[in-house]
Image (cartoon, rainbow, N blue to C red; front, side, top):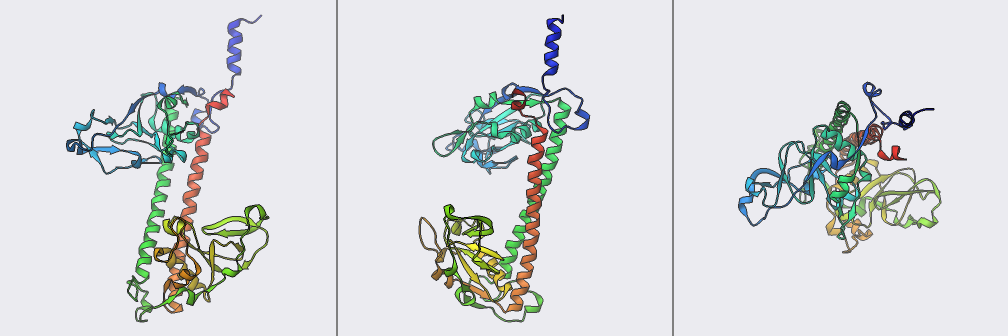
Length: 417
């Protein structure tokens, strides 16, 4: 008859090992991961804000970190620095290598920003600093928390902001492999994050270049010629200014809105003020056209383009104007120009900005001859294609990173289940 000791060992052997779905070859034969409470692996510190009325606390050399300093895994300089006199008088120091986690703010409902302090910093009351035990790689811990941030409880403060309770963070279960495996995972994800960051900076540089180029390729207000002109058009004379209603045919009377309950699902894009909102059966347009937002906060915020081209079989509701142009280059030229200027003087409505047809028709458009329009449109279209390609690469890398993290970290719930 087997002893109780052997029976216990047999049960232990039958228990599923806590291992990730994807593991580096050199660690596949290693022991399973442990489950630990975050509070057992780190010491938590709360921050604060030294009195703004005491000048000797400010204009020092120690970076002061607040919610605005934290974005994803990046910790930026808030622009404020405190002195050593401020330490203990409203703020604390987080040593280099500490894990900083934002624990209060509206952005918590979308993500939980956190990052590793590269130098000693001071931090305010919206941030918690975790001093990590030597047995734990701080970057590994950060990436695991990011990969499973949906398990971090976010509480509503009552003023539209989220809050993470420190005790909830301390109780949060995390999975811990041997130190060498932690370091390998951290290096892998940090390298991928650096690559994503490089692509992001390249994308930002392209967008900045396009913005600056458009400012040079179009005349400034009160001027009749652009500052930058292609060589073959430098002696072509001044540009005309024409109202949009004079160079485009308005097709608004053909728009047909469909309520969400009445739409039949299909393959035809259904456009609203900011682009595609659904796909439906049937179509009302089948050509190259330009849509311009008619209403919505985006007319002021400009988070998305307010002018966008549509092509082929499409359906447009009554929240976007529909314009037809004689030449494709003119359409592209007008699209880029409308997206580069402010339209505040042509908007009506306070709570809900609106660009009605009469005001749309009045917008003055710089209008060179068609060959120059074509040259400018081709240049900007090539740049748009490059930006679109880089945007897709950047998004693909981000998706790859999210998928990789899901494979590299086992969830405690998998074993508990």
